[in-house]
Length: 163
Ligand code: HEC
Image (tube, rainbow, N blue to C red; front, side, top):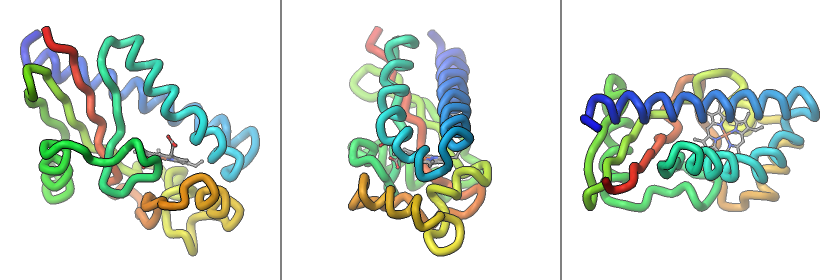
């Protein structure tokens, strides 16, 4: 595939997974409240991205410097470079590059809706104490709080297989 087509394809994958995550977390909050939805994210977020990776035949990750799940740290030097670029350049939406012959797509993720703040916002004013306790229980090294609405939160990283 050409770079433009790969970029569009990767973007549509990121959007599909995002929609799935948001609708699932919203449903979990409606069913049992925000603290309950932490259990849901803890067990389901990674398995959802993993199963969608299989469906699309790519590797789908959400990575960040301020991670909650330890699996989602920045690992490569490209991860770190792109994170800094997105953080510093609000108008840079996404990018496609090659590493070891594999196409990799990065796209910014923002705390785009108020719901995000219930679990990633200010621990003193946005996150309910019961939810905060749950977060600390599951993620003793959590650094994914303190975000305001529309803040840069993380990146989609979509890795295509070598062709
Ligand atoms: C009900 C609480 C809750 C809500 C609401 C929520 N998240 Fe999360 N989020 C979590 C938990 C818990 C994890 C860790 C999941 C895991 O263990 O895989 C997480 C992980 C993430 C990650 C992966 C990187 C990391 O830190 O591990 C991103 C990115 C993210 N959330 C963004 C968002 C955005 C954007 C929104 C709003 C659209 C949002 N979250 C709403 C609880 C929540």
